[in-house]
Length: 67
Image (cartoon, rainbow, N blue to C red; front, side):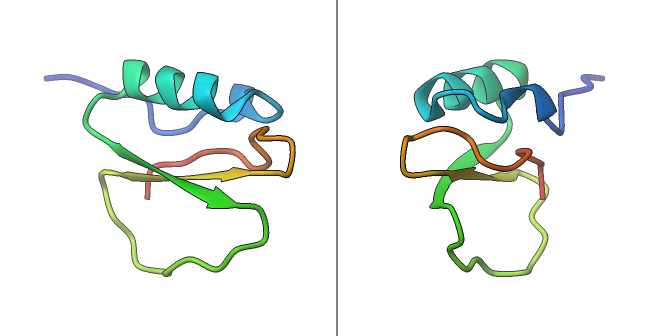
């Protein structure tokens, strides 16, 4: 049984491309969806999705979480 990472607080402030690679390395079962800061997303939960919010400088602006 594998236990994958499900949150990455250490990625806040990190470049988006680096964050995507880190998330997919830590948990290859997820799909990373890039979301511009302050954008609306659906509220449904999905066990293999990570919303990756980023700012105007392409830095992660919120803690990425599976869901």
